[in-house]
Image (cartoon, rainbow, N blue to C red; front, top):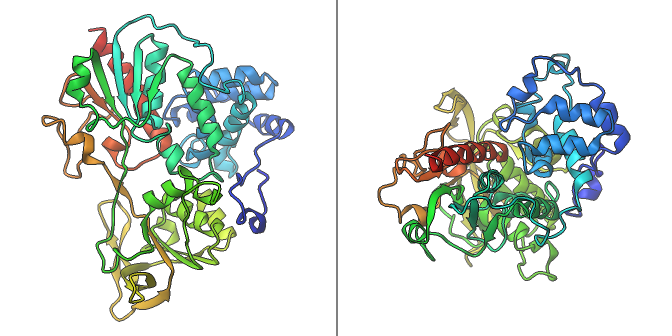
Length: 455
């Protein structure tokens, strides 16, 4: 796919890939073999009829293509951009054996982008009548919550989504940068979900403003908890309390939700200085590093304790970061952050590793090499090593079972918890995972909630 030149894109927050034009989309769709076995569908967490929508694109039936996708996926513009197709539908594409699977994600994006603009506000005429007065509460307006809410609304339920932040979208809004996922497209898809009859209440913290028991008294008959994994993890090394040390959550929320990259038009500045270190190598780390570069950093470093082969980030994100000149310190772990005497970051102290035996994740465990410590001058350090569940809501539901990491214990297929009217899915159950995995949980939860309410 055509993209912005790396030398130009590091100066702006505009989307990096341009997307297919009509001619390119038809040419790519024409490569599809229309396999009878449809392995790509089995590889999709939300069961999109992939051969069906690709055939529609090939035949220039673009409205049919997006209708086919939206039968099972209400966030196609999002998924076309951030879903890890290379590990799912494209991975099992028959043409993958020849080294060039169908670019399913880009075709989904093409179909979705052609549809954009038809849901320009939440004041659109509702497309689904509420047939059932039964009230369902969804807690969290991220990908899991929005998917569950839209599926329940399509079935005629009276659905309210309670969102703690001032905008819906969850990680789509606060976590993923504009150059990967434009926020106007997120809101377009939110508007389309509202058009099904879903009510979204923002600035509404369940666990503080109201508790689950309060909502029960108001007549809510079922609950889907999809509050995500918003509590950042730190390394517990010396110096993490210095000015200039951020969690990736705070850094990306300031950049994306609070529009720090548009300062002074928006009132949330971030002074990253000239040298930035990002600890970690997942998608969040790549997003943080690439954002820091666009905020004016002259040199950005990724510090990761394993090798490139073990990096959890998408291949595209690693490739883009490398193209943009981000320096990778592999087999390297931070052991301390040093200040300048006034409380500001001055250096990061690291140690080199070698790989030992595999750990519980199946990846080889990094083992520090004695005597290999070194220091790098830094102005900002961003910790991007993962997130856990925020306890604000969970602490108010005494009988709810949690696992040892503080995530909700819920059946993977049914999303049922140990409390009969409470269901849960997405990162609050699995820990930080992918957008499409959360959406799959939202769909399964909606189906199970429907069964539960129908007795």
